[in-house]
Image (tube, rainbow, N blue to C red; front, side, top):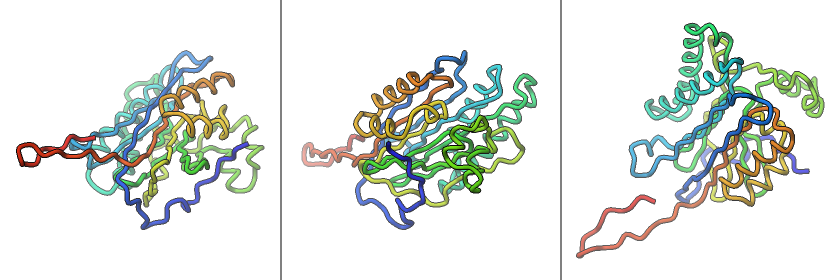
Length: 288
């Protein structure tokens, strides 16, 4: 069985960079699952065209898994997604600083909404973000949704689960097998909207991407049911859209007891198109 390697930052030493200009393509899919009446997951991705002003800010990939019941979780995850997206493309500064601002703003937006809507009291959401600028990716994360990197056939978990059992594993009080079987495995210790101050994990340094890398984001409705070997098989051999469909179907076969959301993104060398000359003078380039 394929194991998920823990990400130790050895994949991208600080200061390294890829020489090639990179292009990112991908897809996302979300399904309510077999037992839930609503879908409390929110997903978005923005891959700006090189010809747009947003291109200098980079690409944004996000999954959020809401909680709170009575559709409150759906409200929380949607608020997080909208707030992070808006501020990411509006704020100036280094990517880690911007991501930190995005998480603070999303936390405040959720709490403000809950104060004005009693039915939403106690709502919250996970939020896992990958921001890509030029040849590097930065992670912003809170909760137990996940981000993975598939590189050279090895799957590495980029995020860390902010759950009670994951904390106990990190402290050596539980084994990974005990944590996976624990009835408290989905108890979160960090989320957006649940406390006045949020403490997200935000990378200070970016991960250097390479052609051939695959990035995966998903909610726990997928990673609780689909093992690493299936993720490697689907993401490694299929185009992003087909890989998303295959992974959602795999989770449904395993019971689909929660909302299921997944995004798959391919990193490749950007194709350089020739620039023809017309009447002896240069023409504008068409953005790839």
